[in-house]
Amino acid sequence: MDSKEFRRRGTEMVEYICNYLETLEQRRVTPSVEPGYLRLQLPDEAPENPEPWESIMQDVEDKIMPGVTHWQHPRFHAYFPSGNSFPSILGDMLSDGIGCIGFSWAASPACTELETIVLDWLGKAIGLPDSFLALKPGSRGGGVIQTSASECVLVTMLAARAQAIKYLKQQHPFVEEGHLLSKLMAYCSKEAHSCVEKAAMISFVKLRILEPDEKCCLRADTLIKVGRGFSGFWAAHCQGTTVTTK
Image (tube, rainbow, N blue to C red; front, top):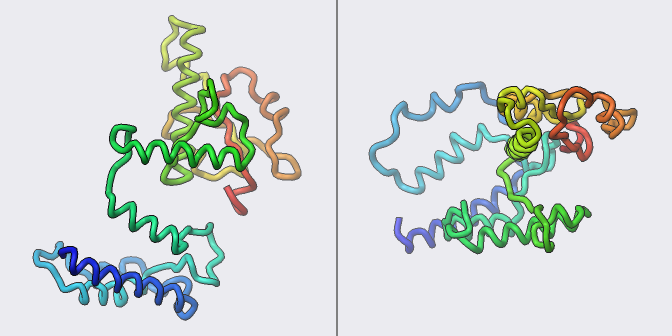
């Protein structure tokens, strides 16, 4: 596909997306297929020869769409909203076109700096103290965008674990790190998402699941009461409950 055909197919794709969203309510919310339905409709091996674009899009409509759960459907009330506004779709197109991987400042200065600035905007919008912001003088705060809530929980737990081990090592320089690790305890309420338990398993740390109060809130005095004997290093904050929001 050269740039000339890309322009034509891109225009067709935008039209397809618009038609999909405008007629979405005419489709089933959830598919009426059985597990393994797609295996029966696709070859066992990857195709060796290219197919016409028209055939590919026909396969999308005939084979893929019957197995799609339509998250944007007006009668879809499960899970959580999935962002696909027209501006975000255009943003994805631009990002894919530029195609840089911003894993460090040198890899793409604009990616790193824009992420830092936007996260500070978000931190200010939700009222975080200056110590959580990257661009405040003397601050050690700031954040990075993760691909999912589960990944975010895991990354923060690993970072907190590393800091806790470093602190305990300073207090007990001759104690093995494995023993120090056994003294760490993470906390969450029973309203927290299951990804917290998974993160603790991957991080090889103990996790204590605590009872919230009558308003489903985990109270500070509860943490203080159960924290004796271990080094509490991480606690999950739930903005609501799993059944309402993370």
